[in-house]
Every structure is written in C-alpha cells, then in structure tokens.
Image (cartoon, rainbow over the protein chains, first blue to last red):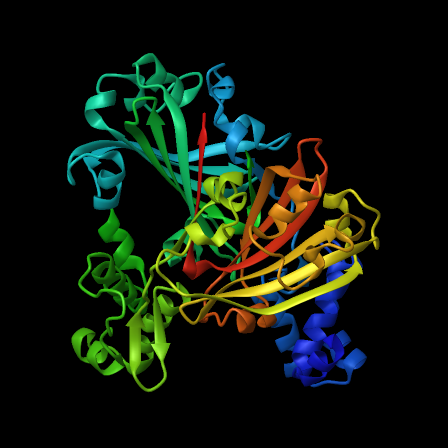
Length: 252
Length: 252
C-alpha cells in the first residue's frame, strides 16, 4: 500500500521521501550535508527544478536548512528537554536555584533584552490575573540564548500592588527568582497551569528568536496560583519549536 | 521605539501589522472578510504586489485564510481545550467513557481511517516500550474528525504478546477503550508521560489533517506506564495546531 501511494506522488516528492527516509535511518546525521542539486539530477535523472523542489520540501518541513553557498544540511537537533512538572517544584526554586538549571545541562545560557516596567494589564492577562483590564501590572521581559541561539522569549506579568517596593521590581530578583520572592511576600505559588499552542511566527518573533524559515513557534502561557487560588503571575513564553521538547509526566 | 521600528519595516509588513492589530482589536472577528487587494491598494496607495504580500504575511502566520474566489478571511479559532491531566484520570476511562468525551463539548466527533495491524516495532517505539527493535507490536491508527475537520491522527503501539487474543486486537476495543482493557489484563496504566514538539507538516500530514497553508503540526508522544514502571503503550499523535490548546495543570 505504501508503494501504491508512492507511485502516485510527483517525482520531487518521491525524491524528498527518499531523502527523508535516509535521514530517519541515520544515513545522514545532524549537521551532514545532503546531496546537492547536481547530485540529485544525476542520481534520479531529473531536471534542476525537480531537484530543487525536493530539497525545498525538506526545508519547509524544517528537517534540513540551506546555508548560502555551502549546500543543504541536516538540522542539528539537540533539543532542550523542558520537564514541565519537576522544573517548577519548589524544591528547585525554593533552594535558590533558577528554574532553568535543570533544563540546560552543560550548555551556556545567556539572558539578554531584560526589561522591567509597569504597564496597564492587557485584556487577556487581566482576565487570567483576575484584575480589571488596564490595572497596573509589573512586566518583566527577557530573552534566553542557549549556546548563542535565542530559544525563548518570556514576558511575565505580576499585579503591581503585590510586588511594589520588592526586588521583583529590580532587574535582578535574587536567588530563586520571582517565585522565591513571592513566597517571602506570603504569596507562595503552589499550583501551575500551562497552556500550549503552536503557530507560525510573526516577522518580529522570527527575528527575535533568529528562526530558520519554516520554523513554528510554541506559545506557553503559564499561570501561577497560591494555595488560596489567587493568580499571582502570568508568564507568556514564545519558544523556538526546533529547540524544544516539552515533557509532562503525571498520574492517571 | 515601536514607531522607529515600524518606520524601518518594508511597506507590505507595515500594512500586515496594521491588519494584524485590527484583528487583535476585534475590528475583524473570526470568519470576517479582510479588505481585498483592491481595497488595500486604494487605502495605502500601493501596488497590487505589495497588497498581495501584506495578505500573504498574515496567511503564513495562520491568522487568516484565503478562500478561492471569495477573498481572505479571519480564521475561526474555536480550539479544542485538551486538558492533559484530568482526561487521563482513571475516573474517566475507568467508568467506560472515552478519553475524548471531556474534550469536545457539544461538537460532533467522527473517528475514521481506523486500522489495526501487527507490525515490527520501529526503533524509537521499541526503545520507549523497552522491547527489541523489530519485536511484533499491535498498531492501532485512526483519525479524529471534529465537526467535519480532521484534528488529530493517532498511532498507538502495544506489545503484541500483551494484547494477543484480546479485544485490543479488534477495531472496537469496547467501553473505556484500550486502557480499560489493559487494566482487565492486569496492566493498568497509572502514570503517563507526554512529550510535545511542533514543526511544519510533511505533505502527507497536511493532506491527512486537511491543513491550511502555514499551519504547523503539534506532535504528542505519550507513553503509558504501569505501577511497576512497565511501558504498556506508546501513542504518537499528530495534531492540527490551529485546532488545539493543550493544557497541563500541576502542583509546584
């Protein structure tokens, strides 16, 4: 049946399928150069346009990337394994560590484009925080760059009246970060909800995360709740989908 | 600063940004028709190609979709809220309900392209199930169509020796589905791990889920474990990203 299906496909798609299979079989590993247009023209007896289309299919799927003048290469995929549940355990941030410390293994993390400001709460954020739209919120935004590649942009919103006069208003929130400070203020986050979507990036998002063409973004909207059920933070994250595997483990 | 940034953008991107803002502000709601090329040419004093590029940007982002001969429309987004944790609670499938019953509210779900077969375990699946590669596994694949739109394709793998001679080998697994049957067999799944990725679809995936251009897929790979830590099922799901919000709630 797979064969009948293959015979109905246009030639460039059959070539793309063969290359895809070779990548999945490990014949071409991460960072390897694929056969070029000339190689494919000779191997499959096709026109240059057909060879180009075949490589284009794999680029659109995000499996390979073209480097100018050098050819088409299998993407190096060494994703960050973001383990949703344990990373937010208070055993982690409660001991003064960053939530990120478990995610990145031996890689180098740089946080840049850090901005702290007070702004009126946008509608959807106000709704999640349970405050009136336009109510002042403290907005902390920053970008995370791993081994030189931007992987995540995060914008965190906290009710201004909750954090006024605390180090959550400063650029450096101190050991354990925002959640440790909220705990000291008597607003310990004990429950989290993460909502996940995916879509193609806007031009601004693609630039900010330095995304290769054909790479979607993953959006995570996290709300942190106290034991009393009060929402104390909303964090809107935009992730490079090629850099991440999100993992959630739970009881049935 | 936003203004300086805007002035540096090419004209078609500025038009796209204005339309995007109007959609976010609710000026154009889901299903509404956007101004066409002629309208944009007149309103912004630009060439047809520029107007077309502006609309193309929003299509690539998946915010709008072109319908042949009718124009460009704001996408109707009424996503399925897939609540990761409670939907797999044994209180749900243990009582004979389908895992899906909580997801779809009042909408009409049709399951089609159901196939059940025995196959050698592919490498990554074998690794997750802890069986040798090529070991026979029972493969159950099916497509979920909600209100006429395919939203998910699921391929589930179970060790053949575990399910031989049971209704898991039939098309209809009976009340509560596979997990209820595994429980009766003494292999009750009590812990789940879901791994989530996102990428652009292959041509086959785009066709199978009837995806609009510029729509990524979300991949969920779920492994179900017994109390003894044995992996009894691996389920590889491919989701239309425009149809879903995934939600996970957990304690910190």
